[in-house]
Amino acid sequence: MTHILAIDQGTTSSRAILFDSDLKITSSAQEEFEQHYPASGWVEHDASDLWSSTAAVCRAAIEKSSIGPDAIKGIGITNQRETVVVWDKQTGQPIHRAIVWQDRRTSEICQQLKSDGYEEQVTAKTGLLLDPYFSGTKLKWILDHVDGSRERARKGEILFGTVDTFLIWKLTGGASHVTDATNASRTLLYDIHKGKWSSTIADMLDIPMEMLPEVKDCAADFGMTRPDLFGREIPILGVAGDQQAAAIGQACFQPGMLKSTYGTGCFALLNTGDTPVRSENRLLTTVAYQFDGKPTYCLEGSIFIAGAVVQWLRDGLKIIREAKETQPLAERADDGQDVILVPAFTGLGAPYWNADCRGAIFGLTRNSGPEEFAKAALESVGYQTRDLLDAMQADWSDGEAQTLRVDGGMSASDWAMQFLSDIIGASVDRPQVLETTAQGVAWLAGWRAGLYPDQAGFAERWRVDRTFKPDMDDTTRERKFDRWQRAVQATMGV
Image (cartoon, rainbow, N blue to C red):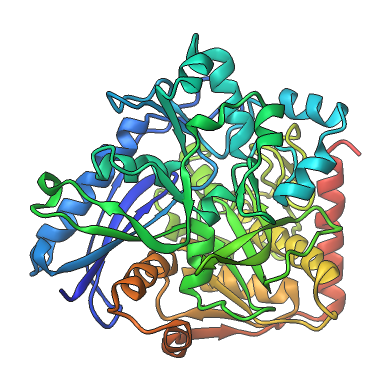
């Protein structure tokens, strides 16, 4: 057995990638699925689409390769985090569409809980904030709005899971109702200090604990796939939420190491070792990974809109047909214009955490066109990243600039990564392997299976593709960032 199958179930598509014994890609397959927007600020997925697309791409990746299922030693799963699925234990059918991490429908619930004085207690236990982003209030909303569901949950008739849990349940034919510590730490229901579900918070949200999955290490035995799916049973050996999987794939195993992933959103993680650092700047304290029952913690900053701003240029404004057209447009933009785009399409994440504000554009002139919009869109990702890194340095660093490791689709843009380096005033390392999220869980599963080396050995394999160094003078950097900060304040109505 020489291969690992990595499942990467994301916000807009499901992918499967086969990695060989050298952690090189043998084959891959990808399938997009429909997004549902039933109301302003609401985002849903049909959980059946998540499962069917995942099963389809796994089979397609195997068929594309020259190997058969007998060569697959294990499966690793990484997933969009915080998205909530609730399903019938007997039939496997979801009782409601999955409520996606981007969804903001529980803003009023969160505001009421804050007004009632619960946020300090929630943050102390979970490391998170009372925000619609996290799973807990989404799950409460489903139980509040689907007749009889809370009583059924108490009877053990329906189950809750983040996407990893739902996929494992389907892959194992209902034999395993499990998750890992990284996904659990994003639910608003998990005490990251005690390493278990918090009955206090579950009671606060009126969530029956009977419906919660068992929590395991990131590299563990999660169950065996049904033999009819791939022709034989295959063990599931590695699980991590997508952002933690990317940090693992970037070999960020030492305290102080920092990565930022640019997918639909942008997520920066700073490894803080075995100490959970309480943020004074509205960052999140969460589990980076857990091995042998021992969690490693990180500070995380979450940006809701990164790659999605390019999708908006394509699907909303229709000024590009493909994402790759953004960079040449930005290169042709008029440097004399200073257009600022605040992409708060679904509110602002860290360090602002404003669920109610919406996007805005500043500095438009009669000459502003597609080029300036493209430039402003790419720059917005750099500005938001600096917001996160400034907050992280205030919480953790001694003020010295650190090298940032980047990955995700937008990291392929040289223009965007150069601007990122310029605006943060530090080096940016782009690895040779951009599929770091899938590679991270492939390594987890392969390490568990004995196919891949340990952390130190894996870290030695990490290779840089290109290092971007800042080429912007300090005066320009601070002038531009000051304009960004003023635009954000105006967007929030301050």
